[in-house]
Picture 1 (tube, rainbow, N blue to C red):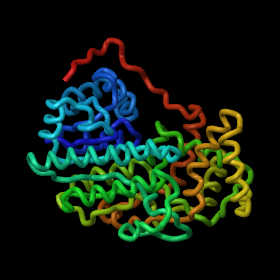
Picture 2: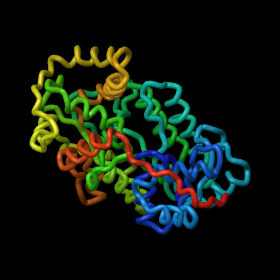
Picture 3: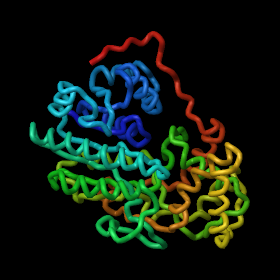
Picture 4: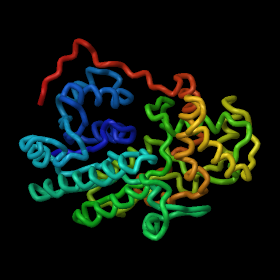
Length: 379
């Protein structure tokens, strides 16, 4: 039986796929949105080459252990024909649902992917449960479901407060997604993971996810920061997140139903980060002026709409992330630390490598195309 992984072409999903293929012998079912099987494989190769830079190894995996279903998360039965959907249901005994729309500016995208898409994955899990039993449904959510917060530590079981406002459609729809998963699936099968700010890999400088890195680089270049130097920001490396998801997903009895994948009380202060970058020669130690926070946010909003193209893009990203940069809120991670037996690497241990790599590569990963000679066999 196989693990059904959604979001396999996404940043966290690609790490989860690589960890699953390395740590287990189980087959893997993945859903990829594409016009045909060839395009689906090309998308998968682009997403996974950060982990499998040898194309022959990638091809060996997709021909031997990975079954690619070409479909759409938001379509009924993923847009698969009856035979393909039946095959997916019949071969799946656990689900890791990583797919999500992080487009915080688009309510439509968040509703379609995070709600409609999750409902379709739930229906698939229910069908798999009727056929042979569902071992586990791991749902990747976000700490943003905690809504508006300020200067506090949030614990898993008290994070969701339905009377509390949310910062954006992404946070609100992910909160409803958690509710659907917990209400519509057998409780003993569900585990919910809530990553905090996922930024970089603690083991390597390369990354394929640059949105948050661009915002980070933009702030690092400013001589004056409109932030409080003692405020903490809860950043966790993607390798720790993927390790936690795969490890806990494969446990016969996880200790808890919800885990924060976060830095928790070990979250670092802004001054810790800027001092590290200054020592590495990647930025000057800035002057902190928290009182500039409100006018700065207004300026960023104006630049996002009216600034030069390159600056507007960075400003638009910063505008989206700004509420999460100034809330000085961390998420208790004692549960996941107990399960894994280790804490995540602090951001200051790898932030300089991440920023240097991103700048040198102009915030682009050097993807390699599909080898011309490679043949594709449809499933």
